[in-house]
Amino acid sequence: MQEIDSTNATLLPSQILEEKVWQKNLCSGCRACIAVCLADSLAYDHNRNCPVQVNPCIDCKACLDACPRLPDNLEMIVSPEIIGPYLEIKNVRSKESCSRFQNGGAASALLAAALDEELVDCALIMGLDRWSQKSHPRVVWDSGDLEKCAGSKYTSNDVLESVKDLVKDQHVKNIALVGTPCSVQAVGLLRRSSNEYAVKLAQKVRFMMGLFCFDAFNDSVIEKITNVIGEPSWRIDKLSAGDGLMTVTLRDNRVKTIPLPALAEFIKPGCKGCGDFTARLSDISLGGLGSAPGMSSAIIRTPEGMGLFKIAEELGYIESWDGVRIEAIEKIGKIKLKRNGF
Ligand SMILES: Cc1cc2nc3c(=O)[nH]c(=O)nc-3n(C[C@H](O)[C@H](O)[C@H](O)COP(=O)(O)OP(=O)(O)OC[C@H]3O[C@@H](n4cnc5c(N)ncnc54)[C@H](O)[C@@H]3O)c2cc1C
Ligand code: SF4
Ligand code: SF4
Ligand code: SF4
Image 1 (cartoon, rainbow, N blue to C red):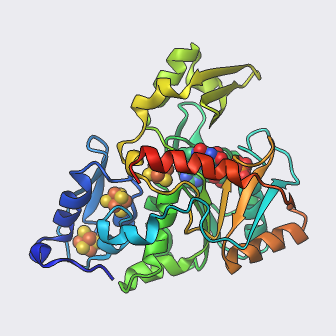
Image 2: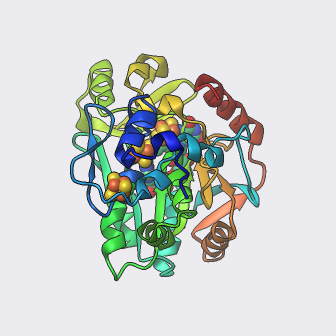
């Protein structure tokens, strides 16, 4: 799929990524290039905030097909349209209640329906070490484990790194994946790739749920937050970013807030080159913006997303209403695009 101009004809794929993405601080950190590299040639360098070549490359070019930050791939991703294509937009909430749901618990409830109905073998989502507040990709096989992973992890966008083992596992035929827009973009790009392994990976992802995303932070933001609020990390029950504040709910239900500008230095460098707020390539996009507290806004985009939504609604996992404030989503999306130079 990737067309490489003649000036780059002699460069290795990792050199192209170095020149066009890594050196320019454009890498989103999505790890898609690492996930599609059969030669295990790439690994993530946390000091540079981008991958690095660690093993010989077989020049298959799958990483070039996957990278959402390569200029040749941007055309499919960046658009002045904030909402993007959709079939329906709904307020939605889980019929179960759980204090750790970020908004309406829609993501957890849709995943529960997909797992219980055996529409997928597993869900690839983000887990959290509740002692340190550091997050990590987690594969969930049983819907009973979903609540443990509910809530937004503002320091992670590396869910794709774990997809590699799942693709190798012959027993795993279908995966439901939740990701930030950059993760979703990479899988969307792989769905167009002609590389055999990339196609295999993309075909295993049956449902893609994208989360609205303004910014993500690097891990050291946790230390900053605990210093500002004067509490250890293990006391934190939930973080919630919105309305210019990071709201910290503690285990004893006390609530502390930090203005988001005080955390600006911890924003991941690649987030400042991001041109998608609503995960336009997902099957269903979910965010808090546009809905009342305790509900999620769901942008249902594809027939696959609509199928899952209807199954979850008909089986009583979720309930939904019209009336999402689309203009509120567009307003914040436009602010993001303008700040990032699109
Ligand atoms: C970095 C980040 C920034 C966000 N910014 C905004 C914003 O500006 N405006 C807005 O309206 N919404 C934003 N969201 C989305 C919002 O916070 C909620 O995630 C969304 O509304 C879904 O809530 P829910 O109650 O339906 O999900 P829940 O039922 O609580 O489930 C959330 C699911 O997402 C998974 N998950 C959490 N974090 C990640 C992650 N980083 N990568 C992959 N999977 C993850 C969890 O493991 C869980 O399965 C952001 C989310 C993230 C992760
Ligand atoms: S994906 Fe292919 S081209 Fe890219 S680094 Fe790995 S082996 Fe090389
Ligand atoms: S943006 Fe993603 S795919 Fe591109 S180099 Fe960075 S980690 Fe790899
Ligand atoms: S802003 Fe969100 S979607 Fe964009 S690169 Fe950062 S984590 Fe990914």
